[in-house]
Each structure stands twice: as structure tokens, then as C-alpha cells.
Image 1 (spheres, rainbow, N blue to C red):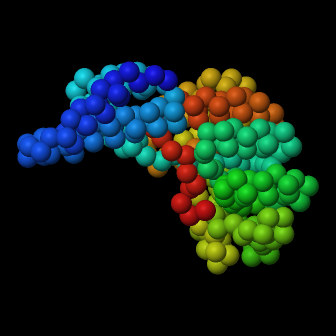
Image 2 (cartoon, rainbow, N blue to C red; image 1 turned 180 degrees about the vertical axis):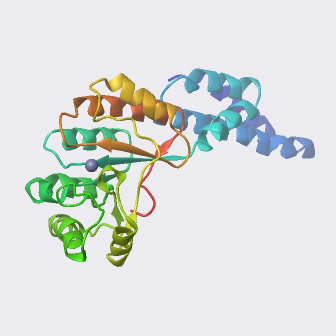
Length: 264
Ligand SMILES: [Zn+2]
């Protein structure tokens, strides 16, 4: 990338250094800000790609720092999105999702099914190594209502043990299958050290094989603190994988960061 005006900025800064005038020295910090704006804009452009590059550079050159600063401020204000993946791990799909998350420097939470943990332990170990977190989605997609303490332990406690054996980490958050959980199960989860984590955006990725529909629902629902429900198991997930690439690219370009759901 060529930045034709950067040399000119340096030249003007050199003039300022050579000048002994007080007024020149007072303006010096503003010139540094122009250079700093270039650095930020170039760094942000390389990080996110997209249309920011040329326009922001021109703005920084023609009208000082303000245009570029405004754009960067808008982006920084976008905030964080929390991606979550239920029903895995699944050979193929989970690995593809991990690769996409890595490519876009995104963190997520996986809520595995307990009975799928041991056969796919390597996928969960990789997820942990990549900086993702693991929750608990019960042993066999169990409904967390009207359970005895024994039933709850068979569904949730057993999954805690499986995840810890496979990865060395102990989940701190529980995603109830189908979002169903009664007060007694909430209390039993709390006794197990688990907080219940639902979602705010459900693109119904398990209902469609249209990746554009999934991506559009997530993008339309994006806001600071959004919790997105996706699936890396429970059936064919090609559409989810395809949609994820679009979601990471477009929302990343808009300035969102993908971080681990607090509580996990
Ligand atoms: Zn589920």
C-alpha cells in the first residue's frame, strides 16, 4: 500500500523541529496526531479490511485527525458479540468452525453434549488451546425440568466430569437444551458452580440449509453484548459453517469483536 502523503507530513514535522518559534512547537502535537492517525487507520484497515482504507486515509490527509478519529471511534463503540456453539463436538464441523474462528481472531464458547465429549476430546482440547471456553449442554440433550438430584447429576454432573477429563477445564456455565430449565434445576446448577446462559440471537441454523438466511439473521440482530446461538452438531451443519464465515467477516468489518460470553 502506498501512502503518498506520509512523506509530506514527515517533512512538515521536520520543519517544526528546526523552528525555534513557540507557536510551531505548540502545533507539534497536532502533527504527531496526524501521523498517529495514519498508523491507526493503516492498522485498523489491515485488521478489518473493507472500505475504510482509502477513504479514511484521504480524510486524515485532507482534514487532519478528525475524520479518521470519528470513524475509529464509531468502530470501537460497536462492542462485543458472544458466539456460542451447541450440540457438538462433531468431527468435521467443529474443526471447520475452529479454523474460521482462528482466521478471524475470534473467541467463542462451545456447549458440548456430554456423550460426545470423550470420542471427540481432541477437538475440545484444540478449542481450549485456541482460547475458547467450554460450557455444559447436558449428557444427552436432556430436558432440565422436573428432575431429581440424581437425574440432574446424570445429565449435568456427568458432563462436568467428562469435560474435565478430556480437557482439564471445568465448565462454569450451563446452556439448557431448548432453553428449558426450571427453578429447581437452576438451584442445582448453582450448587455445581454453573450459571445458566441463554442467548439473545437465534438464527435457527438447525432449521435451514440456507447460509445467507442464517448470516442475515445474525447480522440483523448484532448489537453490543449479543449472545448468538449456533450449532456445531445435531445434524448437517454446512450452512452454519458457511454462514459463520460471512458473520465473522461482515461484523468484524463493522467493528465488532468476538469475545467469550461472560460467565463462561
Ligand atoms: Zn442443543
